Amino acid sequence: MDFALTCPIPIQQYPTVVMAHGGGGRLMHQLIEKMFVATFGGEALNHRHDSAWLELPTSRLAFTTDSYVVRPLFFPGGDIGKLAVYGTVNDLAMSGARPLYLSLGMILEEGLPMETLWQVVLSTAQAARATGVQIVTGDTKVVDRGKGDGIFLNTAGVGAIEHDLTITPQSVRAGDAVILSGDIGRHGIAVMAVREGLEFESTIESDCAPLAEPVLASLEAGIEVHCLRDLTRGGLASALVEIASTAQVGIHLQEALVPVREEVRGACEILGFDPLYVANEGRFVAFVPAGQADRAVQVLRRFAVSEGAEVVGEVLASPEGLVVLESVIGTSRVVDMLSGEQLPRIC
Image (tube, rainbow, N blue to C red; front, side, top):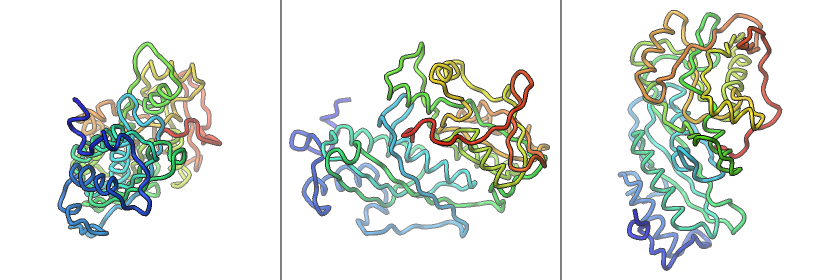
């Protein structure tokens, strides 16, 4: 596709983003009207008002916000635009909410190529359409060259809670099964490989994907979901430690049941990473009563994003607040949080 034929901004006149002091100026007006409003569409944006008017189908809502500073902006399997939409949709889904609306804030660095911005805008719009959410309000700011690393995105999301469950870590109880939705570690390794110029025998693609569909299907199937958590920064290990600590339960995790692709495992060995701590953007854990675990796995496997779902552990009454990993050779060790981020700037 020829970018020059599709971008609504005259790139011969504006090949890069330039400063728009005070939020005004011809370029900023064109960005908002011709690029953002025209591409994201929707009745709420067409009002051109300072806030969006929303129709809410229920009195129980989920609300979340997140910022995205990934470097590089584009990586195998995704980009910052797709990451922002899917990441926010997934946070809503972890409350069992049906994602409805998003806000989108853009911090653009002076000198950002207009082509790069257009690619991010297109990807963001496509991801929103794919997940059925509307981008209803937003903001754009330009910062001095060298102060923004290209583009940062901030999103906030609103979703409808259409069930009576309380899906939180506090709802986890002894006897629950721990279900992992698929293989882990691909997102962090995919981003790190591009960032550091690493080459492996095969390209490792991010697992960046929306998770609302399998979650909502599980609830509609009558699964009594106690807790959900997407496995972003800190990976599977950090998520389980946080939940065990909050619920004051023990979690027994079986390493042999945790799926890790061979190329990811090999990359982690080369880089000195533990796959349990590597970030994901399309994976989650679900805590459900043990008697419903098999049916929950069957429901999840109906969807491509969770077709690798497996029961990987169980919740115990003790030791309270601890995650114990049973290794492939039968030894046990306590899984703790890392003292810092293993992979910074991956989301």
